[in-house]
Image 1: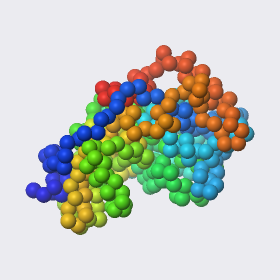
Image 2 (image 1 turned 135 degrees about the vertical axis):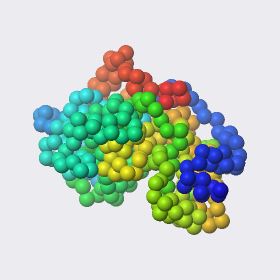
Image 3 (image 1 turned 45 degrees about the horizontal axis):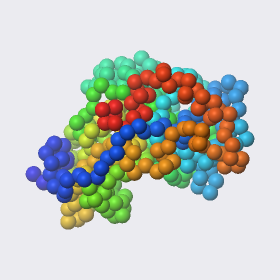
Length: 380
């Protein structure tokens, strides 16, 4: 059986065959992984935006795109939101019950451009609607830790809205350039609640998941190959990663994927040690049997490239200090309080107050919070 056939058939032996290029040598540095200032800033601009949208008589957060950069304005301060997204660790995003209640109110207010929808169901799904779909699925407990807002954001993402979310996460404002301030804020809220949901602790994970993607560019492929050949280098994957946890039933689709890889127009990836969520029960496309992985660091450990340039890679998500910039890895302290605004250099009252709140609530961290603040494998 060829490697392409192994991939389409989801044969576990594929992993061993792919690692023939060389042993993984890259040293992965584990240790305390701080929740950085950009993550705090992201969370609290989202919180402030929702606070205003639901009519709590708070100061507004507004968004605009200028020279292809997304900016946020709050309390007479201007923040480079594109930079905040770039350096925030989405694996650490955790939103409060109050934020979730505000998101739910916003979605049901008639102000949002996107609404959650389930197949064969009229109107906005209720919590019970989601639970009934989950109970009937092959993974009935996969999402029991998630609240309505997290499930609804994942549902919205699973439709065509994933294009806007991933485009913004990857640093491009092109797909969202026509959106107004509220719509930009809404898009960021969906990203935040998808991340928060995927970060909840899961009882079970698939051994492997599989992904097919268009061959973006030869340069992109060569970067991954180089990462493998240099001993398993770590990259930062900025967007959400949609993968499949079950074998494709359609013989036609299997044949299409096999032909695409063999002809060099499709890339296949098999992932191990994944952290994410089975989302098919609440997805708009349940037939895709999707396992969704949050933006994460990725270690590339094996590959095969056929004569036509078609590649199959093996990779695994990691949470490590390896490869992080100073902005990504630093914590919040007196020397680096939080993210500066671009016009005055001062910090907003909200973000100053957040630092005190974080210190005061440290003893009340949930298990999910504790997991997010460590890069050690046993806490992933």
